[in-house]
Length: 141
Image (tube, rainbow, N blue to C red; front, side, top):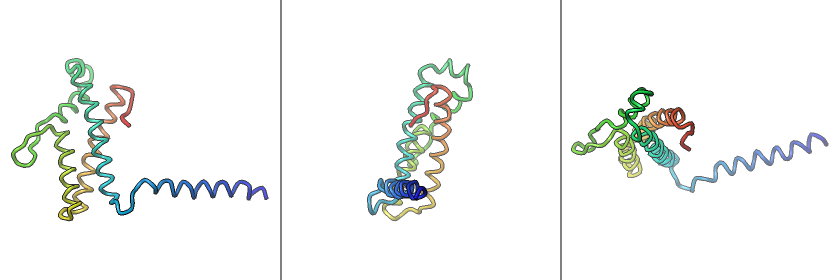
């Protein structure tokens, strides 16, 4: 009887958590597209934070945290997009993922290309988030 008193609430908790964790995706939604959109929005917020912190006092960061300033300069590096447009690398990575996601949705792109673009942007955003923790003591959520 004692085992039943603990097993039933545990079983109900596990079952409820399973249904709640799966409830956020709408039927017919592609999980890969959802992940791409999550990475896009998180990367934009993180890049904006670190670039604004660096831009507020570039001389201070260049002198006192040259690795952080160097990373921000890497994000600002002009990158060619669509053959004729030049955008900062941070924006170009987000635009590239968005283009590949659109091609994937239209069934003219491959899932491998989308997964690769997600990985590239996620890697840069993870590094930016690590820098945001160092320079502001608060991670981007």
